[in-house]
Length: 192
Image: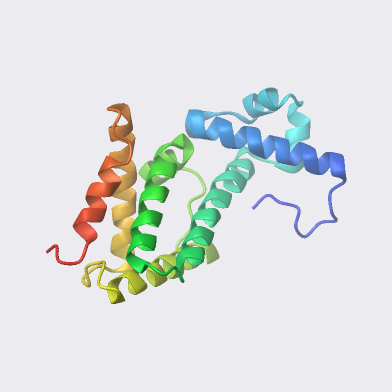
């Protein structure tokens, strides 16, 4: 993923530089999408491109570090909610938060809409973690009677992709959150 986890630990200044590059890349990718260049990220961070290349040898490595890190946070959030007292509220809240946050992040939209960039690959650990986390949230919400029983975790992931696209368009009309809420209504138990 472009990190130095198997290498020796970074010096404090190198670690700060890496964190700065990741922060600026996160902001740039959210605003500009996958079209942003490594040179532009270096400029915005106040570094030479060589500093950025020391931490991320390619543009793809930097994009992967930012986007897959974001996806890992979505998985961690789902896992944290797996034991919430109100399983339905946990499920629908997670779904809406992911749709809204991802819709506000241009590179995540580019990635999910067009398949560009480093998507969690089928069979990858992240893909399996996401499927497991969503599956647990869904199963608990279904057992609690909050979510339709005919939905699978794959259905939920497909609906999430659709909510993301719908949220992007709704944001332009000043209706952020509306489309994810409508999809959640369609997933509620008793709706067929």
